[in-house]
Image (cartoon, rainbow, N blue to C red; front, side, top):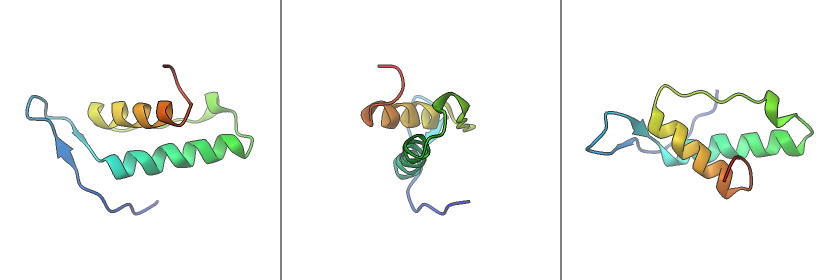
Length: 68
């Protein structure tokens, strides 16, 4: 486990939540694993919140990973 201080935010049009600092930390860990030689197709990231999943995907795209 990794403690990341951040703030959950929620769009008023959706019950889903996201935490940008957590998403950035998760994306950075994934990038580091790939740089260490891990197969990116074998790395799984899960979240119960759709907005958090989308933010993680956005962070990964920003770092050059994932689908454009």
